[in-house]
Image (cartoon, rainbow, N blue to C red):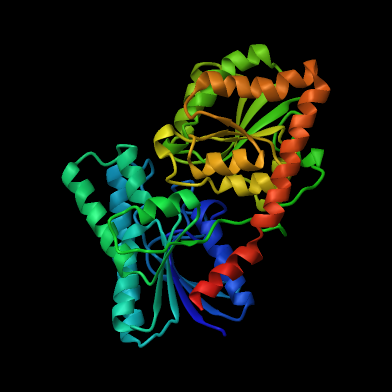
Length: 420
């Protein structure tokens, strides 16, 4: 039965990565199933932390994107976000969207379901407020990132009183939601372990849009047009460039790799608050085997995914099971071979090792990181049959897993059953 659905999040299309990508794909798919969908969001800024060209970020604005009604709200966007600045961003978005939420109430708008992806965790109060005036409305609180846990574990929030306050607020929101969902089993366990009345957390994992990300023969002219030399083996990282990624490890091992594996080139595709800092360090240290490129449109991105010799899924040890990297789903879909930093007994570690679809290393371990690259690249020359078989096995397993477990239509349809 068609539903009227409201989604509130500060990330949405035309953002190409992260939560905005999944929000847009979810809403557009819902429209194809005859649901009426409205989105209250910010002006696009991620991962550049700069408003996209064509948007002003000065007042409220309505637009239609692929059948979805989108309302843009002004938001504070820090150029180099610190913990305090991110909190100001949360508050600014909560305040500007509160105007729209109140308008939904006084104009007698009715929704069957309200979906609040977290981050922003504070917007959970919008779900509570709307549900208060429309008791039959379902409030779905979907946790993409355990924002409070990550901020505490990464020591972004130092004040003990503030930590306790945020934990209390989060507990209150979780207790008021009709449905709480999240993207991985590890996060599911962490949420259930919190001091709430929750007895169930729905698993709603991230997915792959197989119409856009798929196995293909890369167009070498397209790759070369990005400035990437075709005589190099590309070790590829794509996504946000921020604190929790720990990309400094690439800079640490790159000089040694230039000697051991001179045909290896690290390509970092993305943007974020730490990109300029990394680029400056690369220039100052004259590291010649690291290249930065911008995030690419989806068709070129698919070419890069297929062309890369191996992929990097890097995160700091303190992140643990607080998130499941969304970039992983795309890599698996093209049968990519990945070096993945993960701790034992985390969702990422368990999924990869159980299905034998990547090489696991301890987070922030330079020696293990360097050895993993050598294992994939250098030994291909010395023992071709042995290592090529390992690469082929990983690639086959990764692609098979994506086809079975990561199809967009299957995942969203299963989630719809919970809503309906």
